[in-house]
Image 1 (cartoon, one colour):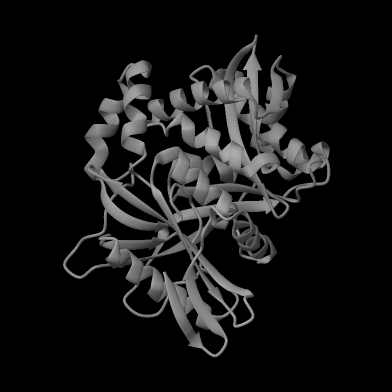
Image 2 (tube, rainbow, N blue to C red):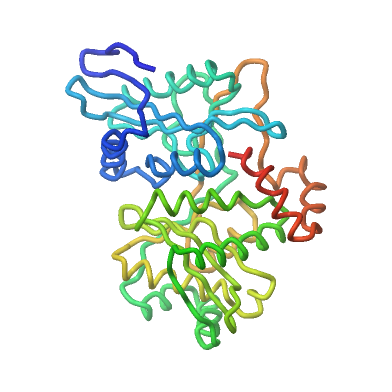
Length: 357
């Protein structure tokens, strides 16, 4: 999609992410923007398209000289179970419009909505950025984001953790647990086994293994897997992204044995140390729903939850899709999923989850 200049200095078009130079230009813009996240990067859009079979669309607003003024990465999600939607960005907790001016943001918002209608998607979800003017619904109060600076050393990090959680971390450090970091076949195998069991125990379907492989491939050195093993057996593992001096532990979990071994405590403390060694200065613990156990866990580590604000636009006469596993609508399905044999959950889960977006 190419649109004539919308002002003497601003034009709009659809980016070709298969063009390496185009993708590099967008990546440079995202990395330089103070509100940029890994989920705005072409690497994320490409990985989602490859890993889940959903189409990605990225709109860019440019000045007359070709300088990028704003980007809007979106995933076209189609599912027989959950319906259709255009999401910015798919399978992410962030995204939305990233722009250097209000004009560019407005242009991208309207163009994104026009594309949603053209594709037959009754809604457009923006998981970050501002809420555009017009027929947009602001969604806030449901999720909290947890981010804080990393301390300058392991000992300073322990001091920064509140007393009760600090005691748990010290106990974890005293246990005979092994820490490995990598992105090879063994790392991916261990991570998927742990993560799949973890989400099954929570009653949610696991994502396709291809999504994790694709993210590691497209992000290269900016992604890795940290795994905790007990007597050689993986018990906790997390796939993290690195962007602009911040580490994002994104897909992490532990087996049933992890709790008694305090493996999750060991994992996140080890990740803080590893990220610091990589030059990171901030730790983004991701989002959690208000009033949940994960939100309390992150607060125990000294993270203060900040309300997240999302935006959604829905075609008149349609209702927004509901994919939150905590919704009463899915209470029975969650209970049933928790009881599935792991092999069956791993076989069926990717077929369901790739339509969540």
